[in-house]
Length: 270
Image (cartoon, rainbow, N blue to C red; front, side, top):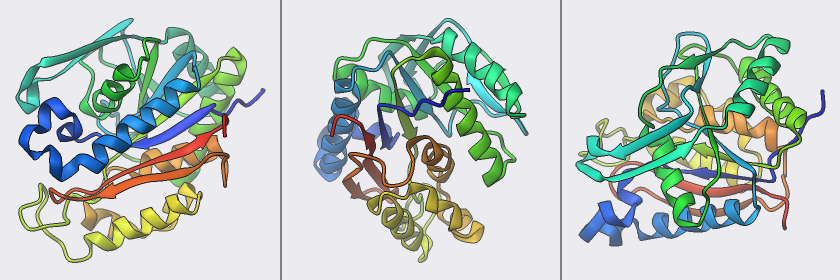
């Protein structure tokens, strides 16, 4: 089957606080991340994709199967974070979901629909920036299994590239993820002195244009960092290729004890 890489791809964080309406007076502390998210969204939208695929670590998970978000139209809000008025809705890309289901069978990758619930914040925060940048097209949100392997991640990426190749549809990819959640005392998962080592290791991989190298980071370091970025990068890496055109670091900071890394992973327009 033909394989089609995304025309543009970005690593984007999913911390609601980087949205200006949420951050308020604290916006100065995460201003670099907010600017970088806006720039990443601008690059993705400028590529004029027919659809956007979001890899979200907060999408509903199954034990051993990847998931695609079911339903024909999705609504999401930041009500769980105290902002019920911040709501968005998107049309689901049912054609891409169906093509991916067929490709998953061919590649022997377990894939099941998730429940038709609200958009998770792992998808909603990046999509807020894409909507602000002018994107109004369909979206496909994909989630990870609780139990997986590097080989299965690669097979899933192959299935996704084949599905898009079958459709012949220009598409953009959002790899959603936050870095360590343990950078500072009072961080969401508590403090660990080695948490910054994890962030530096991921940062080195992304800066070098080799995001797939995060697979070599030890499971121990990943666990103590309480991160949720490596899965998205491990699926994105086979789709974009090593040293992808236009890869560009945009921002890294951890003002609230959680690391936010934003980067352009691929941009064919460059």
